[in-house]
Length: 160
Image (cartoon, rainbow, N blue to C red; front, side, top):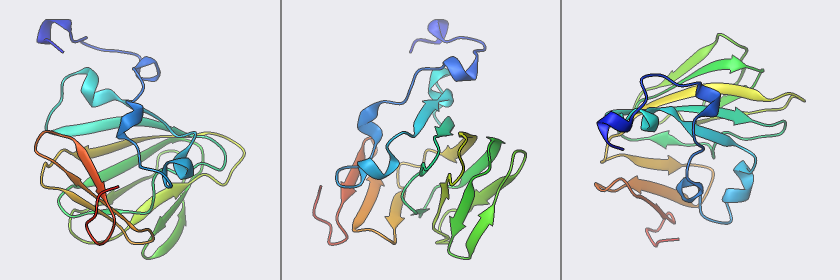
């Protein structure tokens, strides 16, 4: 988007939705069905880090449990009460709470919405082109190519 076409400010909930192609390959995509992401950083042309406004419906899953090798990640809960699942167990979150995950530490994580209400949160991460994502519970891995494309592979390295 050209600089002159970028807005100065927006209503976050009105930002365009994330491209569907950015999601998981089957058979994993259906596990995060219903998750709605609005890539706020893209609206402003941010390239060093991304910011997503994400809504999880009741029963929703933020992502497959994962860890990044080179990308720091941070979440901030705006609405609802998701459960944060990490290598250390489960933590009930509520609005105003946040969590961070340092690159390379291996603390696999995701959010579960076990309530009857939507969960809304911000997720922030850098956009390191050398990042690899490890999904310890699934036969899946992902690398971010220099052109920004995501490449999903099986644990043995064969592509999906």
